[in-house]
Image (cartoon, rainbow, N blue to C red; front, side, top):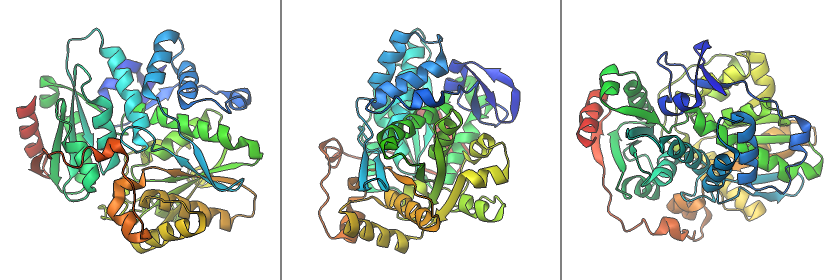
Amino acid sequence: MRFYSTNSPHTTVSTKQALFLSMPADKGLYMPTPLPFLGTDFFSTIAGQSLADIGFAISQALFGDEISKVDLEELTHRAFPFDTPVVDLEPGKTGVLELFHGPSLAFKDVGARYMAALMSYYSKHSDKEVNILVATSGDTGGAVAMGFHNIPGVRVSILYPGGRVSELQEKQLTTLGGNIQAFEVDGSFDDCQAIVKKAFVDSELNAHVSLSSANSINIFRLIPQGFYYVSAYGQVRQYGKQVVFSTPSGNFGNLSAGAMVQKMGLPIAHFVAATNLNHVVPTYLKTGNYTPKDSVATISNAMDVGSPSNFVRLAHLYGDDYDRFKTNVSGYFYDDDETRAGMKRIYDQYGYVACPHTAIGVLGLQAFLNQNQEDYMGVALATAHPSKFKPLVEEVLGLTVDVPERLAVLANRTKHSIQIPAQYEAFKESFLQTV
């Protein structure tokens, strides 16, 4: 398998180069080629398979003999010691795909752990330290921190917007220590993301250190996220209906992963892009005009992205054709009051406790199903455990949310972060002092 830049389709790099470089020098994004078409026989036999088994089978199709079967099987099963179950809200009509059963209680465990396993595999015979830069709006940082913690030869620097992540999210970023360093940025997620992107094209910095990214600009964050769309399809195909996925969206890596496996043959009938007030993609789907904006802070903070990096990939997967894009994706967005009301309604109707991001996914799915007469099976992605937003969920629903032990142990740990303004040079100076 090779990888090309969305800005230079005729120039390709190896798997290892795409994994560690993360972002091409021409500022495009890497895409795999050729993308294998798996066909109906593959998807008709996946019911009952674990996420690890599905990940291994798809990885084999992607990598071929580039990684041995034994190593690839070990790698995928080490990455996914958990599954991603579809929980019924209305059997045969709507369900939620729970993606929070990994160590950090968020969907980004899937991509982060697969990346960590791949980097560990390729780094076995190298004495060169890799420095991973990550911008997070909430959940990415925790998943990456826990996925890469104490992996030999890897240092992780996480940039997060101060005051814009939940308390437990911040604990995940700032309390592990070891090879994990947190930078608390006085700005927004978009500011953090801009700093990371600038670092990758800074020739002076790259001459001193080996940089890589675990953000969704790295294609190997997206590839494994496609695995759970396949797993979900295997769980609901028994109903014999066309399947619609509703994806809570911020940087649009998650939806891009779904579009990728759709292109590989997974029979996804339609996607719903569900966002908060950072609704540049739903607006694009309505008007045809894509206009990134400054991000707006909301209670669904992991989706507070005003300039989603992966819009380029998503559009590319649909041939940069607006009509084709709109045929495959519908967009809906919700403000904080609507999100709170949605969380309450979901609990009252189904007894299901949803975090604000998951609630937006369910609201978008319900809106799409109500506006379309076809009898679909709808699956909304549940992206984070409600305990990660414990004060908000308890306030809205009037109940006590239990915190799983793997998250609760962080509560009393001391936060350690480097506070910096939202300026690239300030980050560069502080970062070079830590390596």
